[in-house]
Image (tube, rainbow, N blue to C red):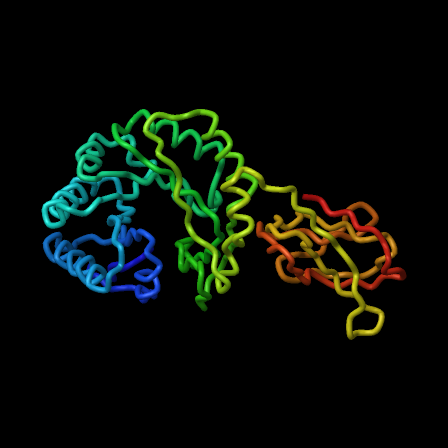
Length: 341
C-alpha cells in the first residue's frame, strides 16, 4: 500500500490512508515508498532518514509492517545511485524485509546485479513501461520479459500485473501532459487516449505462467485493487475470476430505449453479468435506422448501406452496469443488434 512519495524536490510526502483500520485488521502490510523516476538530484541520506521515520510511525500505530517496497522507475543510467541508496537503506533498516520494483529495460545493464543484491525480493513491472501510444499491456511482450527475467535474476521475484485503466493526455509538442488514474484531473491537451488492461489478456498470461513453472517466480501482485470510487479499475468479481483462472465469457447486450425526444431512441450497452466486459468494437445499427450519432467513446460511421457506432478507444463496462453510447432514429425499436467484439 502506498505510504509516501517524493515531490519534485525529492522530499518525502506521506499519503493519507486509514492506517488505524489496517492495524485492527491484523493483516500483514507492506508499505510502498514511491520515488519519482524523473528526479535528477536527491539526497540519499535524507531520504533514508525520512523512510525510517515512516516505518517507525507505522509501527507506533500498530500497523503490522511485513516489509517495505521501493518503487523507483529510474533510467538505466541511474542504477548505480539507486544501488547506493538501497545499500544505505539496508544498513538503516536491517530488520525490514526489503523489496523493490524493477523495469524490463534494466535487464541489459551490467549494473543490475549490484542493485538486486540489496533487495530480499523483486517485483518485475510488465505494464505501463512502454510508450503509452503502444498500449498499457501486451501479453506476448510481458511473457517474454518474465521469461528473460527468470533467467537473469538469482533470487525470488514476483510480477506486477495490471487490473486498471488510465487516461493519458499529450501536450502540443507530443509530450505526456497528464496521466489520469483513480481520480479525475482536469487538464488541457491536444490529444488523449483511454488505455485499459484487458481481463482476458491478463488471464491468458496467468494461464501461461501456471504451465511454465519458471525458475525464481514466486507469484504475482496486482495494481491496483478495486474500490467503489475507481471507475477505471476492474471490479472485484473480475479480479477474483482472473486470479482463479475462471473468467467467464462476458456478454454485452444492446438495446434501443425511447428517449425524451420524440422519434429518437437512446442506444444502450448493458452488461448483465457480474464480471466486467470489454466494450464492443462496433455496433451495427438496424437497417431501419436512418439517423444516428455516438457519444461516450463511440462515433458514427457508415458500413456498406447501413450505420454503425464504432468504439474510439478501449474500455470496459462494469458488471451489472449500462452505458449510453449514442442515439438513433429508427422506424422500429424492437430489433436485434450485431455487436462486434
